[in-house]
Length: 339
Image (tube, rainbow, N blue to C red; front, side):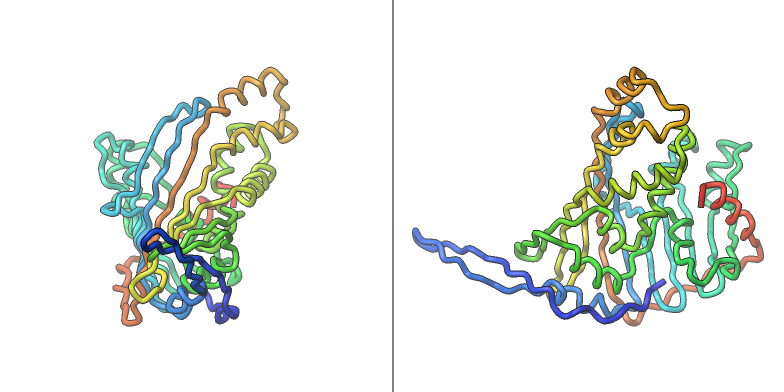
C-alpha cells in the first residue's frame, strides 16, 4: 500500500510572525517554521493507522436534496491499518446505504490488500439483500471473496481506489506532496493552515484525480447524455481551479497528527451547463436557462479529516480464508462503471 518515494526535498522554509502584547505595547517576534520538518516522521513511515471522517453540506433544487452532516469522530467513514506486507481497511457506508435497508442498518465492508490478492468481506450487504432480494450487488454480494491481483497490470496502482471509492493515504507521498503545494501558510499554536488547489490536495492524500473524477462523472454523464470523457475533463479542470482550505494538526513533538481540508464545490453544476456543446442532443437555450436556474442555488461544501498514528510495530491481522474468487465480477463491475 505504501509507495517508495524519495526523501523529502530540502526544507520549504516558511516564516510566521507571532505577535505578543504586554502593557500597552506589541512586540512582533519572527519565528521560522519548517513545514517539511512537521512531516519528518510521516515521511519515513511504513506502518501506520489512518482514521478518516467526512462531512457534507449539500442543498440543490436541481437534485432535489437538502442535507447536512458534520464530522462525527465516533463514526469514521474509513479506518485503515497500513503495513508493507498487508493492509486492512474498513468502510462504513451506513449513512449512504443504511436507508436502503428499510431500517437504517449498519452497512459497510472490509478489505485486506496483500501482494497477490485483495480479500473483501461484504457480509454486511446481507441487510441490503434482505430488503431488496432482486437486487444485483455484483462483487458485493454478501460473503467473503477475493480479487486476484495477477489480472491487474503492475503499473496500475488505482485498483484499490476504484474498489474503495477513494484512495488510502500514503504518508510518505503526503509528506512529499502537501508541503510543496500548500500556499498562504500560517501557524497558530499546534495548527498550521494554508490553501491549495483541491486537485492537488486530493492527489497528496492518495487519490487519482482523474479516476476520482471519472467515478463521479460516469453516472451523471449517462443521465445527461454527455460523453463521460468530456465530463471527466470538466471535473478535473474544476478541481484544479478550486481552492481547498487545509488545516494540519501537530502533536506535542510538532509532527503532523491530522490533516483536514474543506472545498466548496457549489459551482460544479453551473459549470457543466456552461458547456452546452458537450450535450447530445444539444439542449435549447430555453432548456439550458431553466436548468442553470435550478443549478444556481446549489450549495455543496465537503470536509475531510484524517488522523494519523505511526506505529513501527504494527502487525495487521491476516485476512480470512476464502475460495470465493470474484475477479471476473470485479473486472466487469469496473468496466461497466467506465474504467
